[in-house]
Length: 286
Image (cartoon, rainbow, N blue to C red; front, side, top):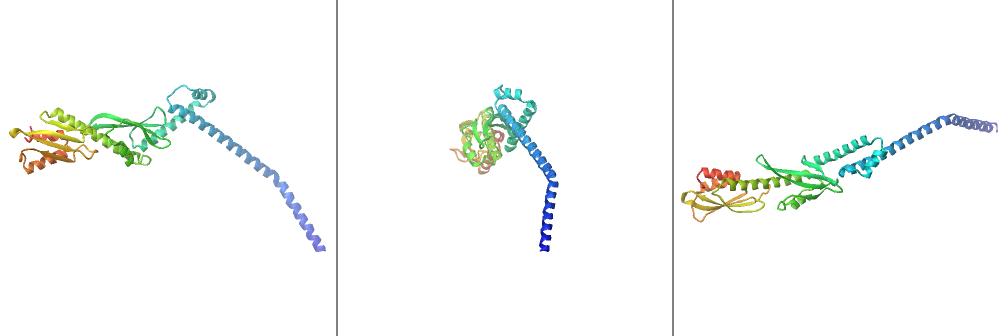
């Protein structure tokens, strides 16, 4: 019995010791909990400030993406916010970052924001042999998905098939490169046709089309003034040079096989107006 009583006394003393230790530790624990509460409150206030700043930035971006007009949102921002100028700079920075991202996606083509603020306008310049010609434009909506909203691409350029052949969402630059090749090749063929008419009075253009993908010319051999037809076909619409040359004449043997081969090779490898100049110098045409 005495042993049991001793154990009960020791157990009671142990409980009293634990309680005393808890009472000693309670102020420090309360202090820790108060510090944790203060930290959470500070984090809450910071998140509230970030949310408010984000809302103000969204308002400014919306007003900047529209044209700069004096609307209600802008007036409210000027009256209610002491940090309107820093917010405007931040909004402008995010706008420039979006444009820079779009510029990177499209591989360095000329780009500017659209008036309605939902996307960008890409300008594709054309030229031939150092001479600049017209530019063509595509308006691209960036959200919810990248798509062409408006454009002034000539109808004979296969824009739909080019769009289908290139994934706009993943390879916008590839699409623009391909489209630019088609446009510049068309402008180059058109300019060659113009130079043929301007520089070669003896050459009669019998047929051509809007895409300048076919050109039929009536040429004349100086000896006996024998006429013949020369047809150039441009089946590769990304190039300025023909892919096939046909020569037809009612009279046989106006050219020997060697001359005929050289003429075809010249027309296949040289812009047509320059090829005709060379043929005239060689006495092959008038």
